[in-house]
Image (tube, rainbow, N blue to C red; front, side, top):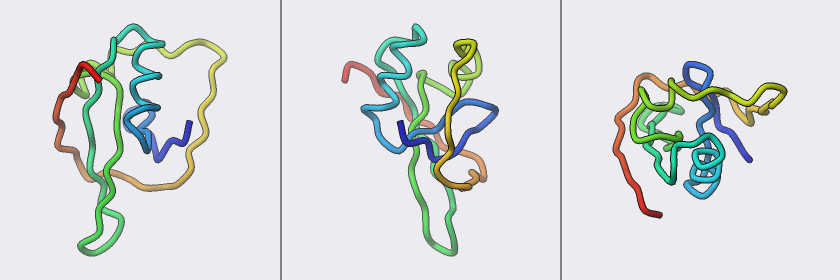
Amino acid sequence: MPILTTLDGIPVFSSIKETLKYAEERGLGRTYHFHRFSTGINTYRTGYMAGLSHKDALNLKLTPGTSYSVSSSIRGSGGSGRSRGGY
């Protein structure tokens, strides 16, 4: 699962498909929201996080012994979230 970065210890994925799999594995159903990251002047990247909101994602309990690799050092400067479901 390509992970762009983490926010508050929760992985931010590059695709919705990966995010939904992660959400389902952790009991959040097929839900996600997104975060936009500044990657330079007038350049942005969107990443996806499990849960309907960032608050939902913070309530996740990571599976003991599970590790995640971060594929870049993109850091968000806040995030605008939008919920989706049913995918």
